Amino acid sequence: MAFWIGVVLFGGLGIWFEVYNLIKALILGSAEQELWRPLRIAVAGFFPAIIGATSLQMVFEDEIKAHRGAAVCAALMFLLLLFPTTDRDIPDGFGIALGTVLSCVSLWIWCAANGLSASYRQSPDAPVGDKPLDDPLAGETDLANLTH
Image 1 (cartoon, helix red, strand yellow):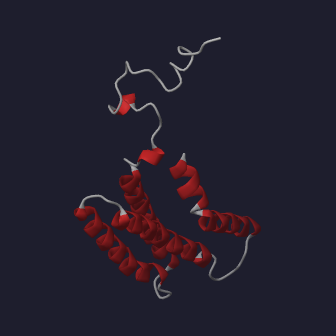
Image 2 (cartoon, rainbow, N blue to C red):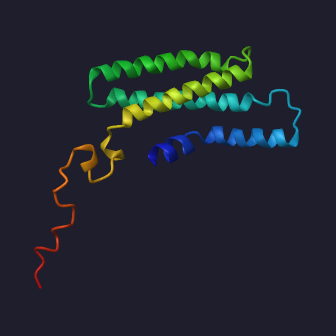
Image 3 (cartoon, helix red, strand yellow):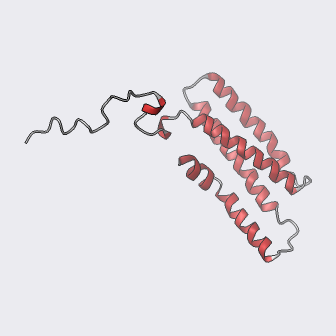
């Protein structure tokens, strides 16, 4: 839920507003010359934010050094790919397509970086092997020691 609501819905709020405005303009038959440009810029602002936040998270975590190197490389690569996404000489359709692909890859990297995070796991952890099935659940033995 944190991924879908926090990252995709609220993180991509600018994209969702521009999709709404684009649909509204298409329905009303707007003759605006650069109709797709705002959506292109919204997508171009989304993936660097996701990959930048994820890269910083991976750099400052106490994990394997290879994760830090991969995070820095991904951030630099996405920064370089930002230029063709925002270049005004390149057609808007190509910029949106490239930005969409980069957004999907950045969301995948976010999931890979946060997949084992304890804050996104549910308790009990028995299905993932962290807790034996026969251990009592939290609060299950609290009434056993209760005296009147």
